[in-house]
Amino acid sequence: MRQLLRRPDFRRFFLALTVSMIAESVLLLALAVWVKELTGSDGLAGATFVALTAPMVLAPLVGWVVDRAHRRTLFVALNAVTAALLLPLLAVHDDSRLWIIYAVAAGYGLSYIALGATVTALVQELVPAHLLPDANGASQTVKQGLRLAGPLLGAGLYVLLGGPALAGACALGFLLAGAIGLTLRTAPAPVEDDRAVVGGDPGTTPTGAATPRGTAAGATTGGRGALVAGLRHLVAEPALRRALVAVVVATVGLGFGETLWFAYVDQGLGRQPAFLGVLVSVQGIGGLVGGIGSAALVRRFGELGTLALGVAALAAGTLAMVRPGLVLAFVGIMLIGLGLPMSMVGTMTLMQRRTPPELVGRVSAALDALASGPQAVAIGAGALLVGLVDYRLLYAAIGVLLLVAAGYLLTGRRLTTPAAPAPATAPAEPAPAAAG
Image 1 (tube, rainbow, N blue to C red):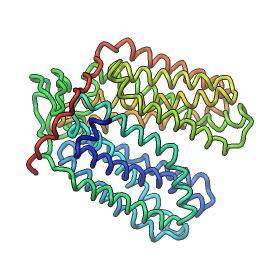
Image 2: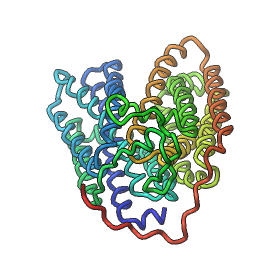
Image 3: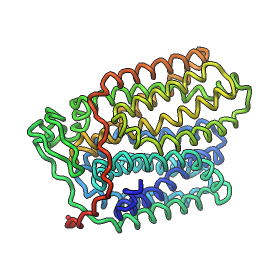
């Protein structure tokens, strides 16, 4: 981390990203709370999350745009557009304008996808290969910290300020993130190289990571082929393909698990639903530990090895829920919190190291879509099953599924090698690139 902070561009980018993530996390839950207060309906409040996730169908197009834009300029523009997107919320004072909240939520969800793909690409652009695990670990540490504090902060600010004022404050946060992003040096948009896309001679990315031969065989540089090139790359590259299968299996398992928490707290622990907030806080503590330690794990075990450890921690945490008890609940939820950032850092670092710059936006967006779609279906299926099947049996099934995914990753661990150690002296900051 010390070497990262010696790089002025990364320091500014990390500050901008932190401000942007704070604004994002504060408003996510507040939108649903706002709808609940205006209508009194749990169903209409839940529909806010449907609106947030609906834009996932546009992920291929979003990735295509990211791969053809100046990433640092796009980061600034997305934060500014998101700030402007929130302004209509200032006019919402009763349920007659409920549609505005849903429309903003849908736009917010689209911005979330685009910013995620842009950040993945920007990290690859700003950071040398040996520091990618540190950069991803740092962002995941902040994200897990906000998982701990963001919803509480958002709910508190909503009560204190009200919906319109909170939306205005978040808009200012996004504007500040964009303003900080303006201080980053611009770099030209990546030029798509047919060799990397169609399977010609291997090249190297600006981070120094090798681009394997045939990483996205069969992709084309125009039309529909350009939109699905990210998916083709995920399927064609052996290590990424293994990670993709494991990530989809893990997110399906976690999707089923999302619907079991209230049954576990009520039937298993004999507590009120509000106790779930305590468990979320404990999960956040585990997430902070996992985020801080993920870079060292990538260097020791490689990307697939770290992803396997993360999924194994998720499995162990889930299996701990099979036998209800307060101690096991805290241990289990902390293991789940620990495993999430480990899995994310392993996956993101692998994706950045095995993907040429001209494809990384589409690959990132495709992975998000392939993980989020099945997870949403699993959440719905879990909501039906929890009324028919004992939640302990469901936890056991999910734990076994996650163990299988972890084993699958371990069998392919040799596809990735531990990341090279960082040099003793951080490299000098590169000279500014010409603005495109």
